[in-house]
Image (tube, rainbow, N blue to C red; front, top):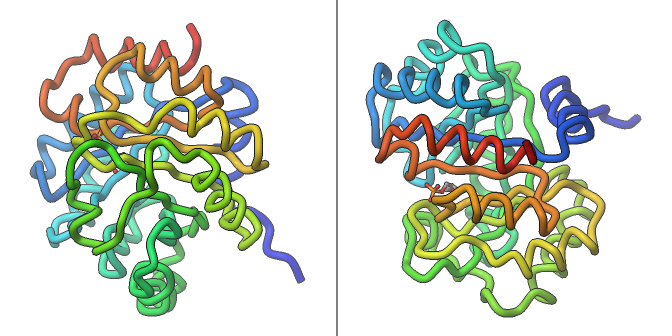
Length: 252
Ligand code: 1GP
C-alpha cells in the first residue's frame, strides 16, 4: 500500500509547476499576538504570498490555535504549521511540516518529538508534509541552533549539504528545507541551493536571513522552489518590500 500525497502538498507542487517558485511568509505566534499576526497575514496575502507558515523554533505560546483560526477567517491562503516541537498541533491549520532535523545528530529532533506528536497529529486530521530540515550556518547562533542543540551545516561545503538532502529524499521526505535560522546574518548560500537542486528530485525550500528582493531572486535563480521570509516583514510591516519579494520569487 502506498500513501498518496495529501491535498496541500499536491496544491503546493502544482503551484510550483505553474509559477516556478512560491513565496511563503512565516508568522510567529511567540513574537506577535493574534491580531497583529492577522494583520501581517492580510498584508502577505495582498502582497502576493502563496502560503502562510505559522510557528517558530521556540513554539512556547498556547495561542497558536487562536492565531491560526483568526487568520483562516480573514485570509484565503493555505496555512502550514512550522513546529518547534511536538506540542504545536493546531487542527485549525491546513497542514504541518513534519520536520526531521536531519542536519543534526540530536535524536529528540530526528525522531523523538515525532513519536510524541504523531498520535496527536492523527487525531487532528492535519496533513503532515514530511520535510528534511537542514540548518545552515548563517553567521550567528540562532534560536533553532540553540534550542535543538545541533550544529548547523557549514556554509562552504555544498557536498555535505547535498548528501544530507539526498538522504532526506531517500528517507521519503517530500521537501528539503535549508534554513539559516530566523534573523540569520546571511541567508543560505546560493551555491548550496544550486548544488543541491541539481542533485535531488524534491523541491528545495530556503529561509533564514532573507531581507531583500535581490536575495530572494538569487535563491530562485539558484533553483529554490519555496522561499520563506519571517522577521523582515514582521519587523518592518513593509507591504512594498513584501510585494517586491513576491515579484522576485515569481519572476514577475
Ligand atoms: C526561520 O526561515 C525562517 O526559520 C525565516 O527566517 O525570520 O530570518 O526571515 P527570517
